[in-house]
Structure formats: C-alpha cells, structure tokens
Amino acid sequence: MQTAPTQVQHFIGGSFCASESGAWISRENPATGDALRLIARGGAFEVQRATTAAEMAAKPWAATSVAERSRVLLRVADGIDAQLDALALAECEDTGKPLALTRSLDIPRAAANFRFFATAILHETSESYRTDAPQHALNYVLRKPIGIAGCISPWNLPLYLFSWKIAPALATGNAVIAKPSELAPTTASMLCEIASRAGLPPGVLNVVHGLGSEAGAAIVAHPQTKAISFTGGTTTGAAIAGVAAPMFKKLSLELGGKNPTIICADADLASAMPEIVRSAFLNQGQICLCGSRVLVHKSRLAEFMELFTAHVSGLKVGDPLESESDLGCLVSNEHRAKVHALVQAGVADGAKVVAGGNFTTGLSARVAKGAFMNPTVLLAPPQDSRCVQEEIFGPVVTVQSFDRHADAIRMANGTRYGLAATIWTRDLSRAHRMAHALDAGIVWVNCWLLRDLRTPFGGMKDSGVGREGGSEALRFFTEPTNVCIATGAQL
Ligand code: NDP
Image 1 (cartoon, helix red, strand yellow):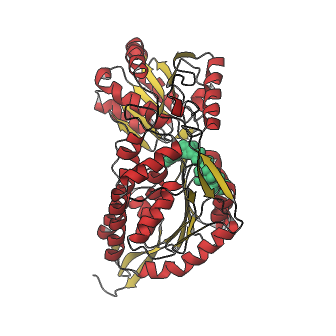
Image 2 (cartoon, helix red, strand yellow):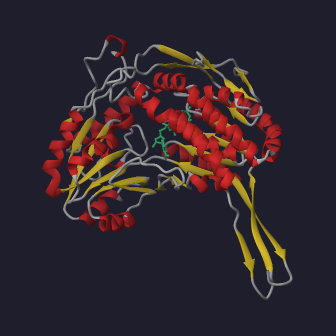
Image 3 (tube, rainbow, N blue to C red):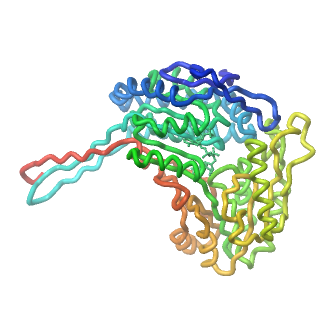
C-alpha cells in the first residue's frame, strides 16, 4: 500500500522534486492541530519547468491512439481503487472530513471520473453536414487537443475535483499542469505516482504545489497554457478571468453557490428529511452544491422545523477517524472563524439560532483542539442578511418561509449565485415549471447530489462560466476545426 508522503513534492516531467527556492508550506491536521506535512512552495520557476516538460510530452501524447489513452486511464482508475485505504486516510487527514466519507464518496468518485472519461473517448462522434445546392459540400468537424491545459482545484473535495478536471484533459490528448489547493494537496501527489505506474508518459501530467497567488497565478499567466479549468471561490475566479481573458485562453470557471432547497406545500417531508439534512451538512457544509438556504411553504413550516431540528440534533460531530462521526471538522480554524462570523451576522440581522451556532465541545483528547463546529440552523433571517446572500461554506443552513410558490422562486433567485437548486414536491408539473424559472445550472427534484457524469455541470450568474462533465468537458479541452470539402455534386 502507498503511504502518504510527509513532504508533498512537485511532480514535473515524471519525477518528484522540491522547489528551486527550497521553500515549504507547513500544514496542520485540522482535526488535531498537529503538524501534518510540508508542501513544496512552487512558483513561476516550477511552472516554467513544468511547461517545458509538458511541451515535450504533449505532441506524442496527442498522437497516441484513443484506445491506448483509454487503456492508460483505466489503469489509473484501477490504481486509485487499489489505493483506496491510503488515499482515503490522506484526504481525511488533510481536510478533517470523516474517513467514512472519503472512503465512500471522494476516492471512489475519483476512480469513476477516470473510468468515465477513459470510456467516453471511445464513443466520441463528430458532427458532419451534407451541404446542399447550389454548392454541394461535405462539412465535418475535427476536434484537436488544445495542447497544455492548466487545472486548478480547491480543498473541499480534493481528489474528486482534481480528477474531474485532469481526466477529461488527459483523455482528449492534452498535457496538464495542475495545482491542487495547498490545504489538501496530498492525494494529487499520490495520484501522480499511480498515473506513472499506469503508464502515463513523463511530462503529460505535471503538478506544481504552492499558494494560489504564486503557483496558481503563474499557471494562469503562462502563455503556453491554452485553457484554464478552475474550481474555487467567485473572487478568485474573477481574478483568474482578469488575467486569462485578455490572453484569449479558454476558460471554465466553477465558482461558489448559495443553493436553495425548496419545500413545496405538498412535499413528502418524512421521507425527504434525511436527504434534506444530508444536503445541508454533508462534508460539514463545505460543498459548493450544499443546500444552504431552505425555503419552506408557510403551511408546512412548523412541521418542517420539528422534523428538521430533530434530525439535526441527532448528527454526531466528532473525530473524523471514528466511524460513527457524521461530521468531522472544518478545513482550518481560520475558516471556522469566518463561518462563525457569518452566523453572528445573521443573528445581528434578526435570525434565531434554533440549533448549533457554537463550536463543538466534549470531544476526545485527540481532537480537542480541532476546528469543529456544531450543525447550525438559523431561522427567519431577512433576505438581505449576509447569512442569506453570502456563501458560508460551513455547517450552517438558513430557513425562511414563503407564501406562494412564485415567492419561493423570487427568493431562490435573489442572490448573486446560480449553481444548484433542489425542489421537494409530489407535483412534477410544478417541479418542471419551477426548474424552468430558477437561476440554477442544476435542479434536483426529490433528490440531491444525484450525479450522472454525462450531464452538463456548472452554474450561472456569479457561480461560473462554462460547463464541465460529459461531452461539455470533451469539447472544452479540444479545439474544433470545420473542414469543408466541395463535392461538386450532391452526396
Ligand atoms: P479558492 O478560490 O480560494 O481557491 C481555489 C484554488 O485556486 C486553490 O488551489 C487556490 O490555491 C487557487 N488560487 C487562489 N488564488 C489564485 C490565483 N490568483 N490564481 C490562480 N489560482 C489561485 O477556493 P477554496 O479553495 O477556498 O474553495 C472553496 C470555494 O470553491 C467555494 O467558494 C466553493 O463554492 C468553490 N467550489 C465550487 C465548486 C463548483 O463546482 N462550482 C465545487 C467546489 C468548490 P490556494 O488554496 O493555494 O490558495
């Protein structure tokens, strides 16, 4: 079994290396406060080295047959499965999320990402058009790899989102320069070893670790990275677009969310409740898709609150290594302080704390210094409160009521974000009408986080630009060329 490294090094041209400067970033285990690992602090120098390696590797990799690329990526997926225990533990240590979650969700999904794109390329089709009189022609579309793709991912679902970007980039024949978040970079590094053993040629996948403002910014600004696929906060996304757009790079930005969960008058509350609670608090609420704003029809508010608070009070916050912990800790004490400040802002605006609102106490000695926070429910904040408008990205959910379903749409659409929404109703024609009216890239009806990797994934408004997933990702990482052949006669 692979073990997580104590020093997380860059992976450039097929080899692990430290930074030229010798600089490291130290990372603590957020659950225990103990020193965990040193992360290489790279910058423009390492990005240039990675670019040189990628330039040498890109053409031969693009020329590799689709069947061979598929085989290599399927072996990467098998390698992830084989290292499930080690990867799950490393991710739990880096992020503080429950080990049971990294074993059941994060790492299996990373393998699924590779399997999906490894097989998707085998079934790719190309558009063609028979052009009619007066000038007969055959038009068809060639799709070529873009060359070198820059992929930048956040800390909340580290390997899940890292692989969601690099798998389609590699599958379509590109070389990649990637940077995971310096808060949770370990599994990206372990993946490099897995990919190398699976036969991915040196230089095809390069990982430069470090701070976003140094390594990340250097990837974005390098003239040879022709596309930037970024997942992270909206402010960072705007900064990246400011650099990449004038350079005419392709851009995919998956940004923040403030997703409404709409409980209609006819919702089957008893059966929906476990999923409503999961959507609010999975991964301590640190998922861009979490349903952090619950909107309840006023006729069901009392019943909803009784059931919801009963479920929330049954959630166990505790040591991420213990199997009975439903929630682990937040990614850092700084992040917990930010989350807590937004709870206090909600209270100052008139919201009532009906569950949580405080840091977790009574934990075992091993995790007594960790960044734990109780699942928090804020009732009836005003729509313009910061706790309703801003992405909290923690175990905090607001509950507001509405009179008419049209009001629910207005409230749901009343933030700058437009990533996801969930509707709980028995009336499917109402669900369809609401889905049409919602500003959201994904609308779930009577379910949450049910993902089919073929579907387009992404947000509107300040939640991002472009879509990932399925054919959208294959298109993003390729450039189309229209070939028009005059046929002289009708085909
Ligand atoms: P950040 O925006 O802070 O960082 C994301 C990544 O970008 C990190 O690797 C970061 O590096 C890097 N980065 C930071 N600044 C720059 C820069 N100027 N140039 C290039 N790269 C940079 O987000 P978080 O890591 O805090 O992640 C949480 C956010 O991600 C939330 O807003 C969440 O909604 C969003 N998210 C969106 C998803 C979606 O699909 N829409 C899915 C998951 C999360 P470093 O960490 O080293 O600073």
